[in-house]
Length: 113
Length: 111
Image (cartoon, rainbow over all chains, first blue to last red; front, side, top):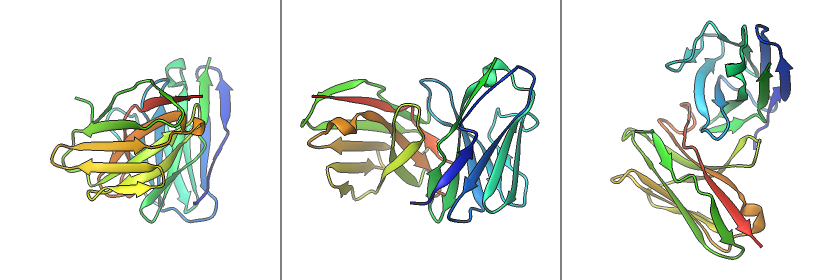
């Protein structure tokens, strides 16, 4: 299947700092990428849909000014968690759409102290 | 009511046994259905899509009942490597829409 990478795989930061997570489709172009978040023992929750060249579409309850998404090319989407707080600590996973299937990145584990 | 509901388990099953999971979904407009597998602290991986006619992939059989909004997964001759969390997933348009995940059913295969 298609390969999606995420970087970094793990980040620990202080409260108030901003963290950028990159999601890349390595062997295909993705006009649409998705960002999910998974808290411990919870289901993956869709945060936003990232469309190349246009604004992201955010799910209800997700603050667009806090979670900045940029999809500047067909192979790269970035999620920036601005002014991170401990409650933002979570497992962030991206996926990229190829034809009618989504391929997931390995995830980024964010810990905010 | 949650959009996708699953029994969280854990299901403790001896190696070689048959185990069945099911889930229900609330959005009758859902068009596509999947089972994903997630290992601890890893990303989910597609196990199989689910079709109304039912489909089989080796030891795995999936069924969909649109009228009851119910999806099932059957694993035959379970292996130790089948131990994982199985996620029931629905979507509006195949992979074109974001996916809605259940919390998952935790399966432990015991030797």
